[in-house]
Image (cartoon, rainbow, N blue to C red; front, side, top):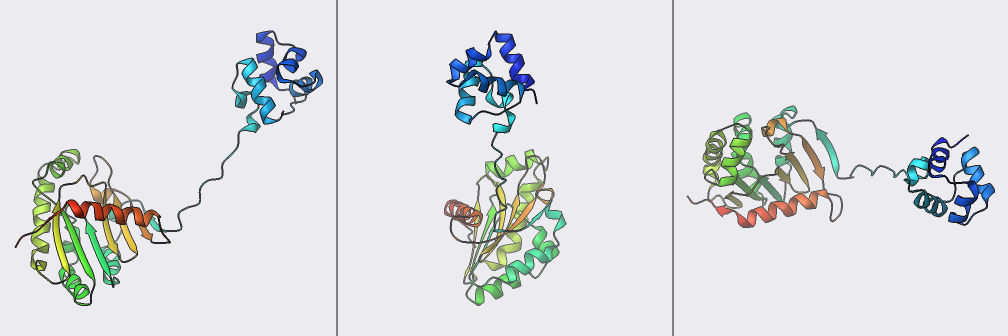
Length: 246
């Protein structure tokens, strides 16, 4: 099959088979086969030819383009949801209820949890009474980042009000052994709901409320994976957060 692209480039530049053969260190018959039979040279030779002709090597020989296999889906990914609204609150509740060692929640408000499951505080008390460490990080309503989020989501001061409401929901847990509540003013890129080695990650999309943004469910699988990335992120935010005073 004629390599029409190669033939046209050589003709435009006044290149003969012998000229290109000399430039690439091959026999003129090899160049003839590249053009007339559509043969593909070795990669190193093709690169020399393309450089001499001033042309992209993949435009001359597309088959040299190495197709990389798509990376396998992370073994830590349990499920992916198009938006948080697709998840019944039972998904969050069941995850937290199954925790034995640690519960971490990083949000600005997430008042939907208490609104849809009024027994949330009881659940957290029960987990803490059985030795589970519970850490809740809520948005500081007076922080610049929380206020900026309200503007970005066209929610006005609503996000600030919801942060204060969330704090009221969790206030009865203040001073419960094993439960810590703090407020943070960081930019919230993802809301996190962790229970032991599992976490629900509610990613945030600029200009959209959290319930419209995707959620992925991760289960830890060895060191250094996606789960650890989010766990370390929580710890970093927690270090900057301020304990809630009674």
